[in-house]
Length: 120
Image (cartoon, rainbow, N blue to C red; front, top):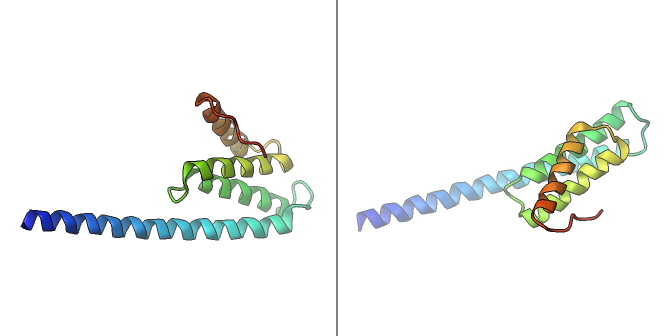
């Protein structure tokens, strides 16, 4: 009886901790999305190389990286979204190495699984 209670208590504690981690991860995603949206508004029409332009590209890539690796998002949601963000960054900054590498990696994963690469 004591062992069963201990197992149940440990399981409940794991669920609580996991739930707290997911809340923190979701908050991190929301914060970075807000930063990305703000940087996009300020930098989408900025000239190449200006601080606003760089902040927009950096925020887009950072948000894409977090989306791609976040345990709070399901694979069918995070990979197409991250791919779209990396493509967005490359549209305005085609030489961005991080965006290019991650875009190519996601596309290769889809191809290796025999699945169509998401458009957009």
